[in-house]
Length: 522
Image 1 (cartoon, rainbow, N blue to C red):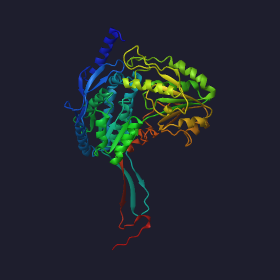
Image 2 (image 1 turned 90 degrees about the vertical axis):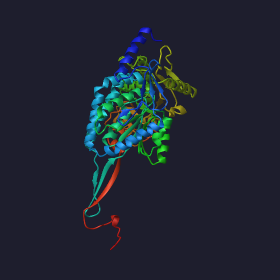
Image 3 (image 1 turned 180 degrees about the vertical axis):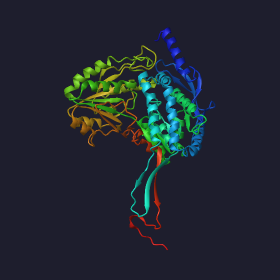
Image 4 (image 1 turned 60 degrees about the vertical axis):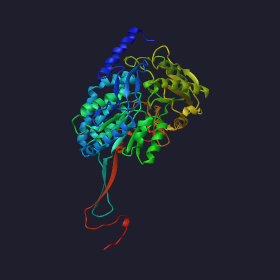
């Protein structure tokens, strides 16, 4: 338990962090905003948000009812009719200002992420930086929403492809990246001419409220004032309302594979579109010729970073037998040095899990792994000597035929397997339903190229001498198979937020038909 002095010091820090955004500890704040303003009359059931380092209530949040959600969509739909007519570079200027707003509040936002989410400060600062970076990328993209000209087979005809704004984009985001991942979506969607209705996780509502405040500060009095709405509430009510609303042509959703199934079914019924980034069951392969120091650093961050609560966290470690014993010794030694504690302390490397239910998932997952034949090598303890939701990172010797190895346990637990060859390692990597991120450590060029070939990793992200976590926003982010197949962030991910149109222009006096078809009419 915390001493009286430590508890007092933390209360001062909590007050400072919340105060930076006009919030007070244990006070009630509203989690509903549309039409350029927050709405204190939100009529959804209130929720509590807790400090995962202590388990204490940070604030009470008024949530959205389904009626509030419908009003938010109505506002966003009406705003779209005006926003789509704003020239794309002007829309980019608004996003540039949003990026500057996050840049100016980077440290305040990072401390709030650490407080409410439990992510260590270094990672929290990196998360805010991701929002800034995607805004910078989107600003450039606002001048490059280009189509193409295609050679026509008909004389005096021009065939072109162009892109138009799509409409209202519903963003359903998760607790583990409460700013960065929704930011990947809204920054691109806004320059593409779309408007936003954002349903964040109810586990991290204060972070989304703070972000919405920045949006209001930047857009007040501009043509973008009403383009961004916030509806905090449960998935069974607000999430389902967004999925069912035909005025929302696109849903960007981040979460479990089960969530993706619900989203896909609901949107299929109304021919809606989805950008899905779902569960990851990510593997790192370490071959006998690898730089083991490099691999070790990547594996430790991949398994322990964000307390194992990243979609790209390393869940499976595949070791070639000649180096397996040595690597495991180094891994256990590295785990023993991991400082677990207050994420607001710059020296901490692993903060708490996000909630008590996450602790239960950790405990139940370990028990089931052992029941199926797994052998616990390190960790596995809930740290009950302190408040909050702290656990030890765990290493489990497993076999590929254990059913639970095909599931994603969202906790700092890594399965370890041994293999004889690269071919066997690739088969193990590809043996799970998920297909988000993967990494191979080797100094052999042929092995690296094999890994990146069509016979290699089946994941949306395949790295060489880099771990599963830490994607840059310049590349398209997403996975295959049960991970959803969607793409966010860089490359040509912007196309997912627009509608494609193919146009034929006849500038001649004849009307030739394609494929040589004749249809004579006087």
